[in-house]
Image (cartoon, rainbow, N blue to C red):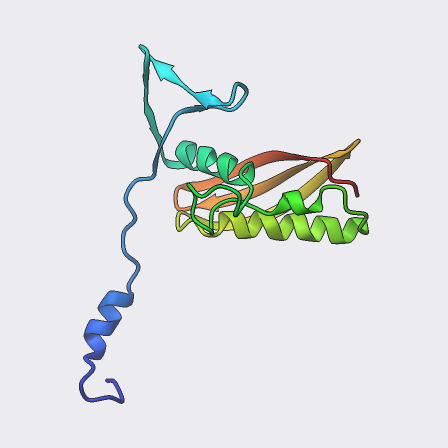
Length: 148
């Protein structure tokens, strides 16, 4: 029952229910060569977590606000940390925040956790868990030029 007589609370509750997401699809991608994969000379689609892994990879390696082809919510801002002389705790906190913000815009991703950062020279490799509507997976990504 709504406090406003002209609002049908049953109709409002029905629209607030989670809508079923369609199966997530993305073109198969070759991460090592940075290009689409082909079968018999044609690109092809993958589904579920395999497709989300491609979306995650592209979101983590695309700088937010740089390309007009992408919406303002797509990509990340980790490049802002390159060349900065900040305390390592601040750098790790900001990387964690940038990654979480970049991925949580996708309605198929329900959580990002268990971050592990490894410094190798001027690069930082991050390993983390990603929970999706299809299950869990482990993701690894590298950001060059970030010093801790």
